Length: 87
Image 1 (cartoon, rainbow, N blue to C red):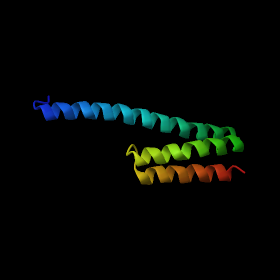
Image 2: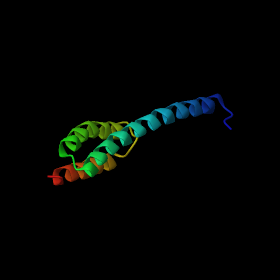
Image 3: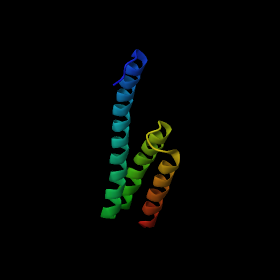
């Protein structure tokens, strides 16, 4: 348990940050799932549209520190490759 006032404040800040990051991560995963669902159904148009929406979400999550920059880039690259292969 935190004893000092600064430690108590730090725990409050961490709790707020955790909630924000959870929401961002959830939103990012939802957008990625939409792309994967479109790929699974074989709908290239829907997959392309979903990817256009998902890419900024992934990169924004990386920018905010929710995921690592390399992880986001790798995910975007793999999804893009899968969409292009769907020809």
